[in-house]
Length: 515
Image 1: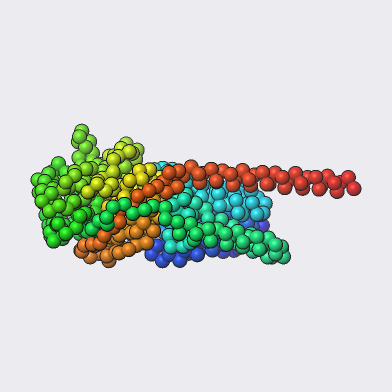
Image 2: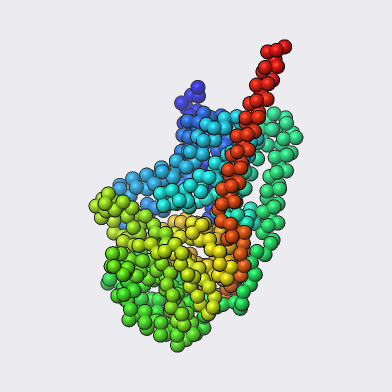
């Protein structure tokens, strides 16, 4: 039995490892940490019982999600108006729930695969880790933030993105961790052949990712399009204030005035018009007329009251030659709607969250179109969901993301948000137009690289050109199913290998007794 001091030191080490892992993600992007840190965590688990692995995984998760999504406190306290103590409780509670995912990985790995052999380290551990990310993407409406694969948008592993998406990159990264640990064990046991084989497999994974990134999965479609992304930088504290409504509208109108006729597409961010469409109809009509007269198209975010007046849709509309609407499909729980409202509505009535009676749009919606170019739209949080952002229409040329990241305050959430948009660009081979109220506003190329951006917290316009793309990547065609099949195969292979090893051991034991 380990001494209490040793247990506490291991717990502290697990917390620190979780904190260190956040530096693999934006804005730091030290991507090797996504391989080194899980390898160190696995090293702690190897000498632990299942229950102890669960505890260490939980401590790791508290460090990882505590340092990675601390901005939730800012959203609900500073902008949601929740008292400090309750905001702290809510934030810690959310982090603790998320910490159960790595805790479950540790427990399941050590409970069902106790032998510290190659198949556990290279097959079972990576498969269970990635399966936990997949479950996290949909359980309790999902929270697909900080998947390990997102940390690799600037590493050789990004070449796997258009093949099988972010999950296969997570698998490649965590499998690299397992190979490193297995190589270290082989070195300590002086099994140098095992060391060489593990390092060779590690090299194959990374070289294959580099080679895959050289394949042009999509092709240019038509001529480049001039775009202007308007960053109004309206403070969240006044954005929904009736007294400041005209000031907000004037800001966007003034920024847009010199753009008419010079740029084919002008884009305002999420809820740029902080007024329901039905109440702002005269203002919208004037913008529509201006767009038609100038030959530009204006795309903007605006809430739309539902037909039965029971709530609102978080919408994106196009003005100009074509008028189309996109309604946000995946809403933010406790931000845009209240789950189990009969239980929580009275408890959360003090939260000053505007437009919190949102209604989701249909899962399947037609793309927006501008000048015969199809555009698939996402509103804020939606771009984080791999399957939700996947489309199978090879003629869609651009991806649009409109967001109001002012909710996140001055935190790492905004660059993390951009990093997920970079992954969507890699997966689909499409450029992404990312338009934020207060930044980061950016143009992302089909190779996942940020081509141009403007600083946060300033009122300005980002202008440039984008090349619509055509084609379909393997990820777009097949989605997550092939990755889930791979995970199942890895677990089956581990179980079979362990059974064969157990039978061999039994035969050896029986042979010794015979002698």
